[in-house]
Amino acid sequence: MRLNLAQLRQQARDRWPDILMALGIPAEVFTQRRNQPCPACGGSDRFEWIDKGSGRFVCRALDSLGGDGFVLAQHWLGGDFFHAAQAVARVLDGAKGEPARVAAAPTPHPQRDQRGRLAQLWRTARPVTADNPVGRYLTRRGLSLTTYPRALRYHPALAYWITLHGRPQLLGHFPAMLALVTSPQGINVGLHRTWLTFDGHKAALVHPVSGEPLPVKKLALGRSGDLSGAAIRLYPPEDGRLALAEGIETALAVREGSGLPCWAALSAWGLSHAVLPDEVSALFVMADNDANQAGQNAARRLVRQMQADDKAVHLLIPERRDSDWLDVLNEQGEADGQR
Image 1 (cartoon, rainbow, N blue to C red):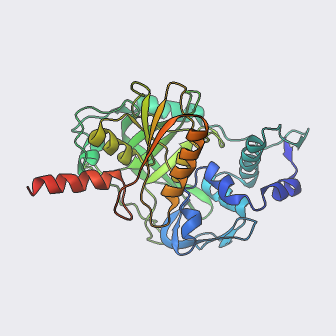
Image 2 (image 1 turned 180 degrees about the vertical axis):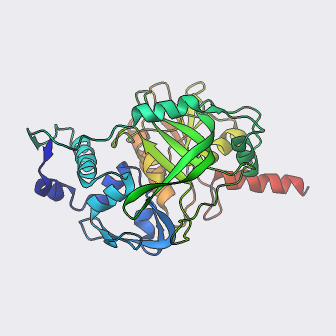
Image 3 (image 1 turned 45 degrees about the horizontal axis):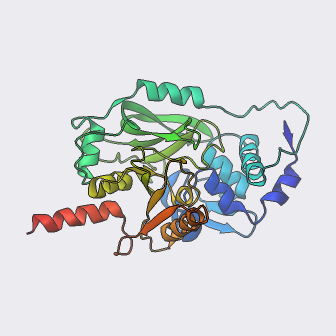
């Protein structure tokens, strides 16, 4: 289908942070604004969020040095411009609850569908054990798990691709933690990937030309637009109770520290847009204490939504600024060890 790009630009104006977060870009990208890593290609300070209604940004690794929200969506998703525009249209149409406004004409660029590839990747991965790189990584993060959620798996040699001079290039194969991303309907819609070393550290990957660090945590969706309401369902609800945190390791820390079953919402945006099963009657929102308030604001939005739905909801935030519940678990362990 051929999109009306002028109309799409008008519909997207002043809505770019929400659109791009729906595509999976973390909320903190839009609050820090200047001198930060690019959400798509990493680095340390190459990215600047400007917006001004059109989603403008700077990424000094791009030949164009940046662009508007469509260009950022393309940079993030890794496809062509039409693929990015389609993804934006899907987000906007989902927000309106209306059918897409498109002209009836065939397109030579069908939207990329990765569901089969991701399903095969998940099938070939292995269960997590204490003596494989994922188990070692979780131990190094301060977790003392005796069993591991089925939503986590270990891949012994996951490919890491970059774009170099406009073309994909394989950087190498590395051990990785895979986490299954599930939609509100219980459908597997993507994989979160964390590249590791064999001894359980995060992989230290660098760009072969610039030498800048590359992101070692990435989200892959079967189709763009599948992220709304999705989460990593680490533990099923128990007696109507469920906790919700942002990151995987934080959610595991909540389980270890409190005994509550916990899901990972992937980001502050994911937390604020969580969709819960009907069986959940008591929700525990385990927010991060972010210096920029992104985690707290997302948590409060979810709390208001749950209260409007007559759910029992409890908001818990660590006392120390710039900390999460994994930090709390580790600090408690250090305190216990000193007694």
